[in-house]
Length: 248
Length: 130
Image (cartoon, rainbow over the protein chains, first blue to last red):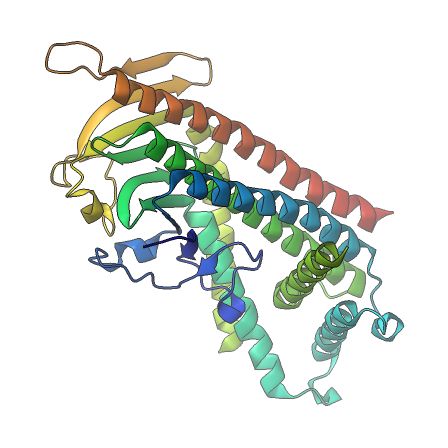
């Protein structure tokens, strides 16, 4: 019997296989007893599996919604930090390893643009291209697909809602669903949407951050190669902020 | 080879972004909400299929029970569910209305999110210009 709610996202292959916002478990290919084919692979699916105790389920979803709000606030902080970085001074950030790592990456791209004979490992350069391509593909999936939210209660599938970019909704309910069950699926939809919006915000922060750094570093067009490094930086900042909140 | 792959990925992304931006304004001006029901024994078969707008009865037992369309100028089309006695099926209607309200809130927050994204981009440009 499910006692703890499970929040699972599938359809996006994040770097390191983890949700950058730390909210959902990520499954590139969601395996379920009733999953008959890979059509679900074409979508972004948020699956919420709730315990049979409706009160407990509601409390768990509410707690998760609060976490999303906290992540949104941390994203604002991460964006501010990113905007203050000065290019060309990674060693001035010896207290901030995340910033040092990012600015070192900027230097690598700057140097790679000017002279391949500068000693940069050619394989590092190839890896950079592959990382940027992989991340861009995931950003594209976020662009193409908005959301598909499924709710199970005590192992029983009760509701499914699809949302597209025009905010059109389609919902299928289990016949005879109770008012409580309906409320729980609605809460699941709200949670998925809030998470989706946080992801969109994350992408905006990363893309504008990479653009800014590329301009500051004088590497026009280099912003795409910077995407993975900025992604890692923002993710690290979010984790650090979460840790700070935890101990304070 | 790696460089070509990246170039290709950028082109695809830029093309999709342009297409989405173009269709977004038209698409978001009309809101559609559909409510289906399905027998409890069969609803799990929906996983792995799409709720096909053109053929909503493709999934065995899936029934379109209520429909609402709201244009940006508030012109509204509503299809109200009735039971076998031609009485409004309140339980389905209440479910549907809840989703309509949720969809309206979603549209509002999507528009706000777009605005926030643009503001972020503009703020970044201002920082670069200063």
